[in-house]
Image (cartoon, rainbow, N blue to C red; front, side):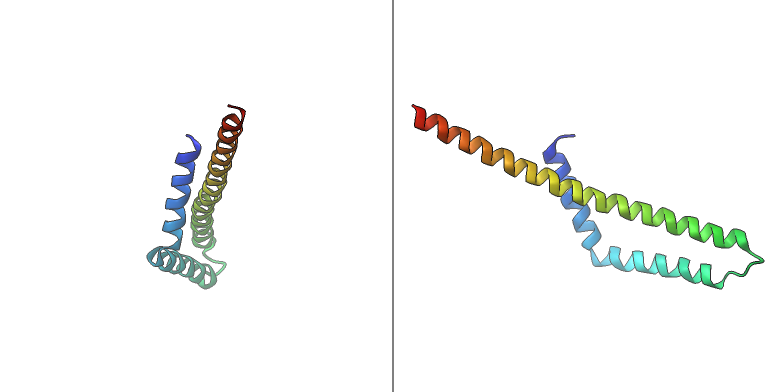
Length: 97
């Protein structure tokens, strides 16, 4: 994958994470799992562990999307720096001619 593709994926991930529907869905998911964890007594350890695993998996998915955003920003900056460098090289060659 090249920098332009990373930058595009990062923009898409950022839009997704900023979408009010995603924010609402994530909060509902997280809240429900926390309710299950809090309501589960010691007689049902498997239910609590399952809810914790689901919460951990959800956090991992969210962290992956957030990492895509960061990688995309880095790729976009790399593209920008390359363009500035190429423009400077063109100017240098034009002055030499």
